Image 1 (tube, rainbow, N blue to C red):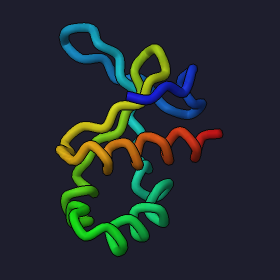
Image 2: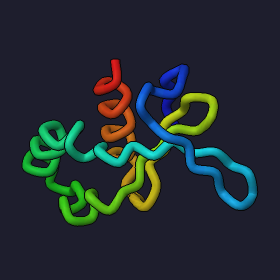
Image 3: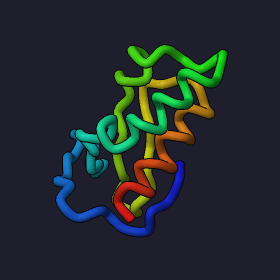
Image 4: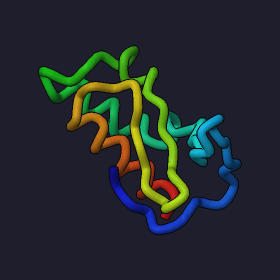
Length: 88
């Protein structure tokens, strides 16, 4: 979970039945595809791109980015760092 510090402009809130507010980044794959292409080609144990595409990326109300539906910790970190960078 990496921090951005605030919610990027243009993201709409979604509230769970329990009251948790999430701001989903629906275009996250487009934002980080170039980096992921290189990672998948060069890292022998990287998950396949089909699995990576299933991830859900969202910001919490404190501006921290989360990557769900993906087990590989390194891939989650790469996605989180590059999503934050794409909003900077």
